[in-house]
Length: 322
Image (cartoon, rainbow, N blue to C red; front, side, top):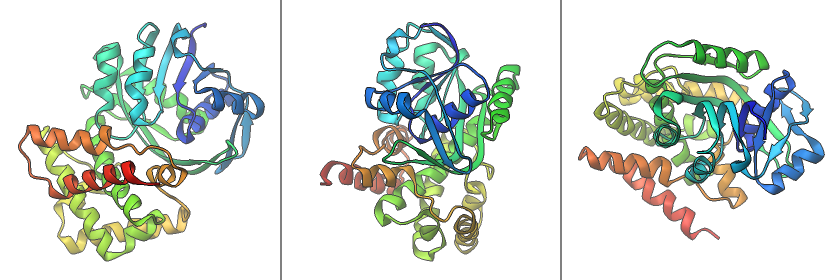
């Protein structure tokens, strides 16, 4: 298999959105997917609906070990598939790799496989939903960030960001990527936990004072863990998590309500990917996200009762449902 500009592991909602846009812009893209998804793409292309409407033919590969190389590797699988897909790509010549997955475990997994010098940090504040037809509903195009893990500015990060941005998915290079990754995780952990337990549209549990109070608590606990890892949170990734940690309970709840009302106006049907997985009967991303954070907190002897409780609850829901 010849080297491509972009190899994208996973053709769920976000992988399909990024891969479809890059291919439509003329870049060589290869989607690393399972057989059933490969058949859908062969028949219909990557079909994107919502914010944009197009269908784009894109080549696929169902045996990742056949990939010889890619200038850029993007990991867009569910977190529980990360180690297997990365292991299968160890023989490929990868120029640079980054993951748009949830959680904070992903960068270490990529660094162990390809060397830390070939890994960028990344987070996606972009939303979509995989429909049963194989089409993808593109619902939110806010920002995808990439950056060097050592905090430096780099030509390669800026080039990748400019390429994806020009293709139609809003992307920026940012030297403060670790802060942004942790900040996104703080927001994601709170919203993931509430999405599974309330099974509601995202804006609804952000504007309700009771559920918003719980979200504030989770964000603050992740902030404590980030501080133990010597990373400060930022207001620039998904939710204003730095302010939520700093302000009074009342003001923090008001910040969430403001964000929720904005989401109600701009993306009223938004549902967390975890809720989509739950309702579709797919496994939940637990161990590599909440579980990893709980284990990390134990290393620092941090007491994070909400995070621990939601980890146990969501893992239990994943085990006993159905």
